[in-house]
Amino acid sequence: MNSIYKNFHQSFSVLAGLRSHEEHQKFNMHLINICVIFLLFCFNKAQALIEDDLMEIKNKCQQEVPLTVEEVNKFSADPVKHVTESIQCHLKCMMEKQGMLIDGIFDVAASLKTMETYPAYKNRKSEVVAAVEECKSQSGENNCEIAYKILMCLQAHEAKVFANV
Image 1 (cartoon, rainbow, N blue to C red):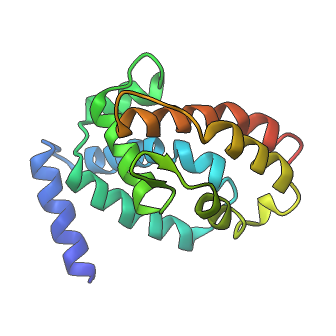
Image 2: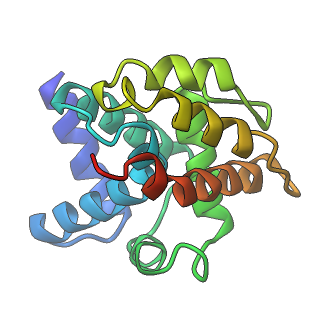
């Protein structure tokens, strides 16, 4: 399995035009940051095991909806101004692979079930439920835009949910 992972990363580095290991690591970290914007809300106190699962999902979504270093950097700097269709569809992929978005519909039960496994939510369940309920009905021109709008809505609730953590 480890050699498969290394081969994927070497191939990906060539495709993405990354010349050095350092560029690849930097890109990988920026890409993880984008994918984790949604997860910041859902998994604020996640442990290393969860990060491995997220890395696997991120890798699958990178294959399905590739993002460039430039897209990742711009979006990381300003997720409202620099959102692209690729970013939106990558976020949709992440949410779908976690079972949180099905055909453009935010699955509240699946999302809450996933969130309940994280200790940070045990004392904040009512705030999390309220945020998810408020954000579930976001609409857009397509499922990618819907995923992005749900993410941005949840991100707006993050400070309130995690106040005094």
